Image 1 (cartoon, one colour):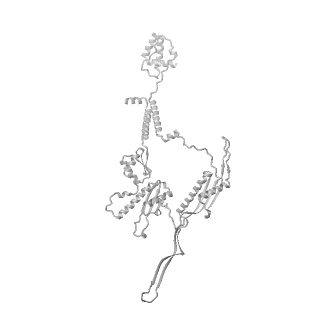
Image 2 (tube, rainbow, N blue to C red):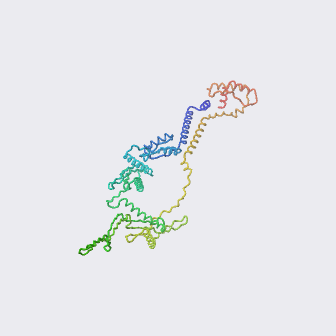
Image 3 (cartoon, rainbow, N blue to C red):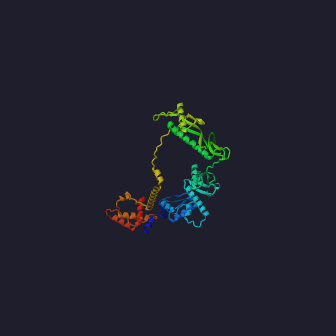
Length: 524
């Protein structure tokens, strides 16, 4: 092998040897890097947005299990090879990881011997807070959560009893503000998990300290935020009901309904007591009778005392909250639009817009009144107007099916095989270039004998001797330009003559002179 390499490098000069070695080293490094990249595992997220203390415990468990991992996003995300995701989740689930936040009801898994009643109550509160933090933290979009409970003990007297309260600090991913429905759901979850706690006593704030819960101010002026929410929901419900009905008649998108509802939020508690003097009933009756004794004079007497109670009635009334006191409905209906079909290549004809008739508007008003329960006695009103809507741009229908992925899209989705094939082709090209560089250059072809020399007639020995000697003597004085051949010149076989034998002998004795003579002949 060494001799073969020496023979290969012996055919090229020093600069070409250096270039070949450099190309070989670069090609080797490229192949190794490509093979490492092509065979490297694909890392996928195992957990994201983990607290740093939880990430440390998880990475220690992965190292103990021999699972390769990478940290991303400043250590809050843990990535593992796609083939080891299931193995990593099983290994972490065995240790109940990741377990962010405070402990839950597992506090009571240990023996509680020697604990006082106060310690038991503190552990119970900590367990409730930990369980609530886990449940809320598992919701979609929640990044961090912290729960604090203020539990009140049961008192002997009801007048001394105070309500329990809770506070929740909520942080969403990306700093977003949670939806009101999410806030109400969290408040209901906390209230339903703690005995004696109501949703009105649960305060939820975001990480910037902004209150998210709706606090009702009974002494305030105007409607509270919760009452405004109820009013908007009532109006939206009525609008959707009317638009769904009108879309069956005038078509989808050709009717707009706006409802203004006056909702009654007054709490009325009334007690009525009435007395009917015409209706009386005997309540008590006392009768005293005096009878004289025998032998004693006197008259007997009887006293009757009767008590009557007049009939009365007591009525307690509590008015419903949230009933509608007045409705004002505005309906906007689009005019009729008639499209005229045109032939292919012809100029399109503008659509014809026709206002709706009074009969149609009256029929629409009647339908809306009946659907929304409009009552003229309480001052409700309905207004129906027909007006032209903005005509949509007529565009070609979009195909339901997605276009088939092209070759370029497939290559971009999975570039590893393409890059590997390209690297192999590049390596083959480099190998061919190196082999061609190591191939020896072809030797220059010997000049063919001139026709004059080949057709020359034999000369006499004297003429050859004198001419050859003169030419040889002349050529001997010239500087040496060509090296003498190492092997004797072989002439083509011809008829043997004395002159030819003499010339061959002269050439064999003085080959250098013969070369110079031949060169002199070629120059002439």
